[in-house]
Every structure is written in structure tokens, then in C-alpha cells.
Image 1 (cartoon, one colour):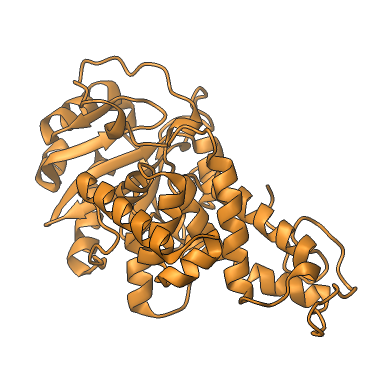
Image 2: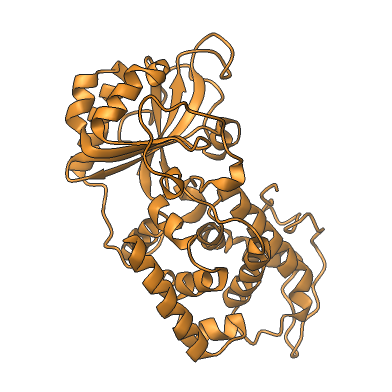
Length: 366
């Protein structure tokens, strides 16, 4: 669903502006152009909330669009008994809970099976709805605000944490995100869900226990991208683009993982990853990596030597969005998402690599 214009001529969903929505409680409603701007101002934080709930950037954007359309259409019935922000979160929660009814939880390859071997056939890709997908930081993180809050928000969109959230029942998921990530009070969450404080606290306890079993926590300490990590990323880009296995050996943690949705196959261990790159993954030789930022982590658009699609010949074709995890001076996870037809436009990447441009340098993102 297309993101709405904020020009003041079109409301969420395409409704014409210019008139005044009716108000209640004796308070005049905002002119519709102003209302559209007020609703649009909440898009980024609502997208972050819906992404944590749903595990898909595309579903999250659709959910937010539906939220804003419902708010636009129902604003004349909004009595102002809560803030506009709280009202929008109530609508967004209901939209997400509706979407999650009967749906299969999204996952990462390592959530579904044991590690594969280098000789395991790559198999057939599973449907998109199987997988947790990456999200550009700019779609879900405010560009300005308290640095400490931004750092916490970055940690709460890590792919591993999003995966852990999907293990929770939908209402528990909403409670944990609202309480632990967004710092709402139990009373505020109870009002939003039409529940009791005791019920909210009980749901939060169960959600915390489930997360603890996965090894994830909502209050994980933020990990800033410092100079050492920037230097590590620069070395990684250099080694990957030169396809230098000796250099990669020094950079990858011995228990590093490699995953490639939509394929279920995933590898654990530096040795197997290097063997795979020299075998089935040899087509990555000659790739170029263009920095982006995804899930609070450095990431890259990978263009493989070849044509403008996976089957054509020629130069610089999109191959994957790589999301990189680092720790202790090593790369600990290479997460490659191969749905380039949708992901490259989402990340603002061109359909062809024609050489470096401004900002196209190792470590520029994040």
C-alpha cells in the first residue's frame, strides 16, 4: 500500500482535504489538512510498533496505512478522552491483532531447523510469509530524539529480538512491546487493550519468561557502532569484495552463522561458511556492497557480477540485503535476504550497480 502524501491535499487513504471533520465534546476538529499532518507525524513510530508485532516491513506499512485511514475516517468520533497518540496505538494494535489471527508465526531459518552442511541442497524457497524480513532503520526509528531512547529502540528491532517476539501470543506481544520497549504504564496498556492492570501484569510476566527461554531480553544494553566496529565493517567489505578467504577467516567468528531466506538452509561455523563461499556461493565473487542500515545494524545491498536480474548477463545485479551482526571484534552473523525485487526499492537501492557514489563506502551506514 502506497505511503500517503503529506502535502496537505490528500489524507491517508486518498480522502480529499479542505473541509473540517466534526468534533465532539464541544471542541472543534482540526481542519483536514492539519489532521492529515498530525496523523502522518506518527507514521514512523507506528511502523516500528507494527513491525515488532508482525515481523514484516511490508505488513507493517500496510497495517500503519490502515490505521491512519481508520483514524481519518473515525476522527469525528474521537472524543479526546485520550491523546491522539494513544488512540492511534489502540487502532494499530487492533489492526495487528486482526492480521495475526490464524497466521503462522514468522521465523528465521535457525528457528526452524538444525544447521545444514555445505553439501545440503539449497532446496526450494519457502513462501515470504514464513520469514521475518529486514526493515530500513529510517522507516521505524525517529531521525531525532533522545539518543538513549534511540539506542534502546535500535536494539528492539534486532532480527533476533523480532524473532523472539514472534514466539509470544499476539496480545502478550503487544503487552511486552508497549510496556518494555515503549515504556507505557500497566494502566495505559490495560486501557488500550480494554483489560485490567492485573491481566496486563500477568501477560507481561508470561512474555518475559518466554523471552528469557530464548536468551533474548527487551532491555538488552545498547551496542553503539563505535570506531572499532566501523573499522571491522570496512575490513569485511574489503575482504568480501576481493573474495579474500584468508581475510574473511580473520574476521568471521568461529561460530558465525549464515542464513539466506527464502531458503531454509543455514550454516553455523566459520569453516562451513568459507567452504560454502568457495562452492555453491562462488557466484558472490566480484560482488559490490553498498551500505544501508537495517534492524538497528549495519547492512549492505549486495550486487553480484552479472545482469540486471538473477538470470541475465551483464553488470551489477541485485542479489541480497546483507544484515551484519558483530561482537568482540568479529562478524557473528551474515543474514542475506534474497527477495531483491521488493527489498531493494524498500531500501532505496537502484536496480543496477554502476559504480560507487557519494556515501557508498564501507561502514557508512548505521
